[in-house]
Length: 442
Ligand SMILES: Cc1ncc(COP(=O)(O)O)c(C=O)c1O
Image 1 (cartoon, rainbow, N blue to C red):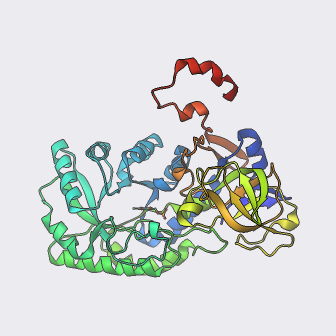
Image 2 (image 1 turned 60 degrees about the vertical axis):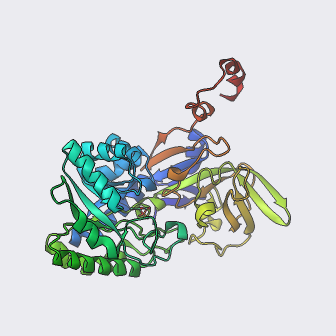
Image 3 (image 1 turned 90 degrees about the vertical axis):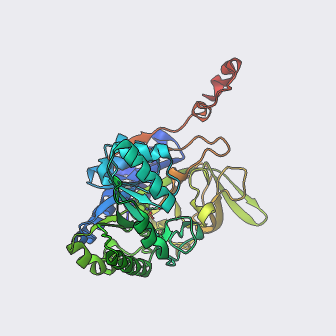
C-alpha cells in the first residue's frame, strides 16, 4: 500500500523518521514517498500493458513540480485542466504532446496556450466549446486532436461532489447527443474530432461502473461508425480508488481484469487508450504531518487540536472523507496491523481531531479511537497525497504547508512553508509604515 511504516515505535517515510522531517521543516507538512508513487504508477502500467495505454497522471490530484517530475521520469503524460496546470507541466519537463486538456470552462487564452504548446488531445465538454476550440485552432493555424467527453449516465457510488458521469451533470455531453455533435463538427477544421473521453467519478472501488460505461461508449463508437465517423482515441479518465482503510481499494490488476477483455479487440484494431489516474497513484504516497497544539474536554467530548485542519486537508469536511490518523511516536504494541476506524488495541480514547480554524467544520476526524495524545505530539494523517495540498487554502490567513519528498534516505524540501509576507505578497495596499512592527512576526 505505501512506504509509511512504524519501526521501533517511530513512523518513517521510507528510511526517514517523520520526527526528523518535523524537526527540520516544522508542521503542518505534507510528506511524500517517491518509492510509493513509482510503485503505484508501475503497477497500473503493468496491469494495463495488454492495452498499451498512455498513462496521463492527473495533475489536479497533487501538482507539486517534484511530483510531476516523478511522473514524467516514469514516462507518464499528464492530465491537465487549466492553463496553470499546463504551466506546471511545461516546468516539470512534460512533453505537451503526451498531455491531455479537459475542463468545462476552458478560456480562449487557455485554449490558445494549449494549441501553441502542442497539447496532445483536447477533451471537449460541449458543442459550443468544440466550435470555439476549432475556431482558435484555425485562426492560429495549429492542428490538434479532440475527444468528446461523454456523460455515460452510470452510477459510480461515490460522494455526490465527485460523481461526474451521471445524467445532468455539468460535464460532457449526453450519449444521445454525441452523434449529433460529431456530425455537426466541420471536418475541414484543423481541430480533428477523433476521440471519446469519459471520467465517471472518483474514488470508484468497484469495476462495474467502468464496465457499464465502456459498454455504452463502445455502442456509441459503433453508431459513429455507421455514420462514417471514426474513433481513434478513447480516454477512460481516472477514478480508481486508494486505500484510505487498509485493503479498501481493489488492486490495479482487478480493474484491468474487468477492463482489458472489453477493450482488447478495439485496441488491436488500432484504438489508442488513455488513462488519467491521480488518486490511485498519489493518495497513499503522502501523509500530512501535524502537531497537537492543545487537548481539551468540552460537553463530554475530548478534542485534539492540531496546527492544521481543513485549510491543509479539506477532504474530511468537504467529502465526509475518512483519513486514518495515528501518532508518529508510539510504543510498538500500539501500532495497529490495519488502518481502520476502530483498531482493536487496548487503551484507546475516542477523540475529535480538529484544526485551529474558526469553523465547526474544521476537523480531520470525528469520534476517532486514538492512543492517548498530548500537547506537542506529532500525528500523521494518512493517504493525504491526493487532493490534499492541491485543495489547501489560506483560510484564516493560514500560510500554506511545506511539502517534503522522501526518496530512500533523502528528504528534500520541495515547497517551503509560506510566510506571513507570502500571505500578503499579492495585495497592493500594505502601508510602508507598518514594516517596523512586523519584525517580531517574521
Ligand atoms: C477528467 C478527470 N480525469 C481524471 C481525474 C483524476 O481522478 P482520480 O484522481 O480519481 O484518478 C479527474 C478527477 O477529478 C477528472 O476530473
